[in-house]
Image (tube, rainbow, N blue to C red; front, side, top):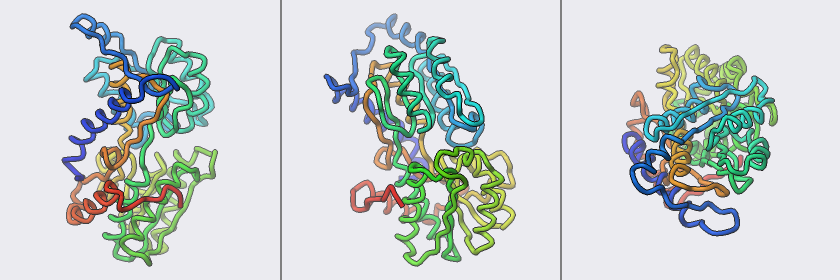
Length: 355
């Protein structure tokens, strides 16, 4: 259920979930509706050529090797497969101009527009009111307007598998978690990871460190802080650290390389996205959060006539989260990981979303 099957299943099943939800929730009340697709070759081509998609990154922007890059992969796929004209913008280092980016895209005629990250929630809500004829989507936040789609992920479920892998592979019985910002979203990663570790080794020692408090998003772009936090954990006996800290994860990988220990990446397959070859081998696996799938399927559904006002959650059932297998370091525990995944999908295990 992991590895090769992941990529093939995710696209098809998520597309079905999104489009079926669009059809099922028609009618009043601000639910997602699906209008008829254009008929005829001429209408199809006109619709395809008219697709202009705008995307506003979160702090760190394109090139973070993680969350933002995953979103861009979905945008780029829309360009290739759907013929979309695309435009991406990055915010200031403090994120203070998020609303301006959305308005800039709207004024330039882009529709739909996607805000990457929960920090866009209020700005998306305001922009949606100002531009009622434009469809918006926000990653990691619920819909808050009739023309807004919430793209949500079961991070705790994927993190549970990361915890199972860490506990099974750990030789010391001591692992760690580094979170970028201490908010409810990142706590979902922590909660799932801890639950997964404890399911394998109830007496495991788990270090937890957040780089910045809630509201201070600099924790997602502070590799120096990530490195210091990880160094302390490795020196204290941890041999595997899982991070959910965006660009700060680079510091975690640097600390792992120096300590000759292992780390677990996040969002993207970081063993492939991290360019520093000396760091790639320390990444045992990564918790894949398929933001690329969410972004692409939202755009595809929009092109087909779907409207907002609802949420779509990408979980283990639709392979919206999972583990990467690059490097083969978790191949020997595949059966254990598959069993844990099945129990979650079947409802035998309910993964906590709060520590």
